[in-house]
Length: 471
Ligand code: NAP
Image (cartoon, protein in one colour):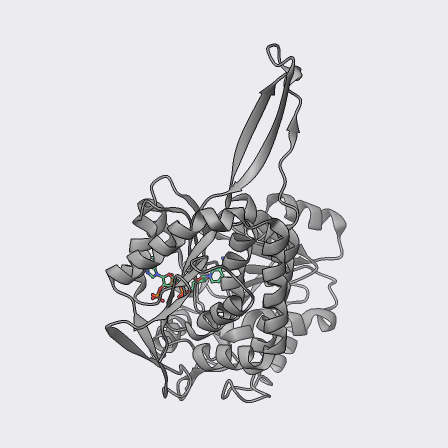
């Protein structure tokens, strides 16, 4: 039975909800359902602690984060096991997430030491003579962090890490299906010496807990990763708070003529099927030059058929269950609709128990759900194009714009793609799924607003204050 973390104390609630493994459907924990009073207490604790936290010197904030890095490193396997258990992410992929989480907190520790303002040349304007001015970046105060299920540890790190680095306090609401790894990190942060009230963790329904966080006046910044539908609702309710939204996508990969398919095919398969496609930058659409289309399809499908479905806790599993049984049914419906409307099913397309086979569709129309909405499942579409211009046009014909990838040997085509693709990040000679944790990361269009990647997240978790001194 888990407890809420409020003001440094582990608190029981009136109501609990059973948490089930998405793979086995066995009960794995009882999770507290915070009520209005609990959420209010968590916000109050963060609000009261904000002055104390703002005064913790940068080197101490960095040291706390460095200790957290050590503690996660000592408990790597436990972290990976928790992620695999609660989210059905295969163990080998979960280990990758833990390694990235460590890097994210390492970068946060480093950034804590270099949050600085600048001096302003006041005499550049008439009336500015005899004045010295400088800016400082001060913590905003209380940050509400709302996180999704698909990277339950690293996406918490992308919010808690920069918030602490900048001297803020946090109320964290993890996804209802994946609270265990968040609670574990909170325990480790306590051990690392984080002051009471600096991190509070509340679990419960997104609609109630989340809405209360987003509408409370004492919260100054909302950082959200999740679906566009919820993100847009949050934006509309947040008033004047700073808001960062990291939302979904239907990311595209473009493959030009003359590309060495053998050299990139494994990455393409990984980009489409890692975590059963439940990745915001999962490859969903591919646009492949007609001169290599047949070879690409043959080699891609052969690799996909080698992927192993199974228990997320088994060492050799590549794909496991989706986050919920009705998700597998939804994705299957979309696949069937695509096939009925003329797409070719090259492999997959069936459920195995509560798992969905990795599925490849060929030549799916742009109006189909599998093309224009976010699938968030183990499905990829391979489309044939006559030119890179056509591929770029079709990539941009989307309401989303998170990242895109283009493989080409032609520098001018690569640079043209970099310029005109409507996304937050263009990966040249790599898949759109590429991410390391200090790079600026975020989307345009319905994929969100704002950027993460520690340094960039800190920009929006601090207030710029100007000081002008008249000599
Ligand atoms: P989700 O359903 O939008 O939930 C995300 C979080 O929001 C959860 O903690 C959820 O709580 C909470 N929530 C739900 N309703 C809310 C409300 N009305 N107000 C405030 N909070 C609310 O998303 P998900 O299914 O967990 O995650 C999948 C989505 O995340 C996909 O669209 C994916 O592309 C996106 N994503 C984006 C990025 C990125 O960096 N751009 C990264 C990863 C994932 P409950 O769990 O209790 O409902």
